[in-house]
Image 1 (cartoon, rainbow, N blue to C red):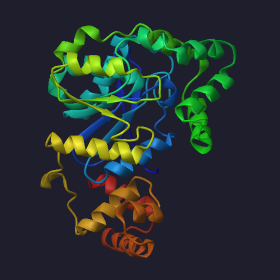
Image 2: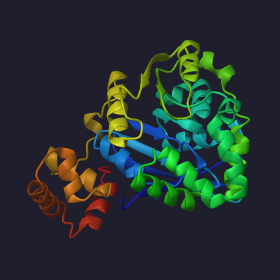
Image 3: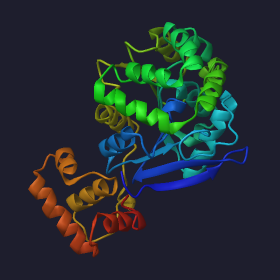
Image 4: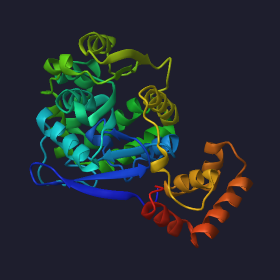
Length: 336
């Protein structure tokens, strides 16, 4: 991605939380699923998810304190501390959002939806309810000792499990993990996660919620059924039979479907005001998100030659000489 709209907001402890806003339309906030994957500037999934949601939704992603572009001097990985991060970002965005919480973000999504119902238009929630259930899994019991003795090997093990042992995907995760944080911060994060417990907040979640269950990973089906039966707003369980949770275009389609069920659609007032055609607006949004012409062609189901022509028309109409100028124009005119 290029020309990211990176912003900062202040956490209760005074540290700066970095977040990025991509797109235009109803807001979707995607908290990091793990401190090791909390680096929106380098994580490829951010662009992939933004591409699948463009041009109809606004994706907001942030870096936890102690990772990415956020402050690294002071961090609080208690459940209250991490809910405070999400609340700071949600407050800075300034409008209700659909929150999509996976893995370590599961408990904080539950607490946030219970505590700030006016800020949450809907929620997708996967992962655990109580940190002690996560640390009791065989995966974690095997991983934590390795983390204490060999940081590099632990990163590799984590990435290969999360990447389903896929070579290129796993290598990408390894690189993101190394950039995202430090051994000290990650150990503190895991210690904090172990104390998270959102059980008491489940009955207070009236927000429409999709309960997500990722079979074959560390999540247990009992966690999903407990959420389904304990949260008044829970609608149904979605499993990998319905969406591939390791494929961000598939996740994007699932988010779109749920957002449309909730009536979250881009309004005419949110459309960029310009002389561009509807198709040219779509191309501009994807271009501003950092996609190549070939990627835009694939996303829109058009030939590369057609997209080349659209890009040139966009440049001409907005008086841009290159992609950077076009991306800046899109940002300044509300099209990205």
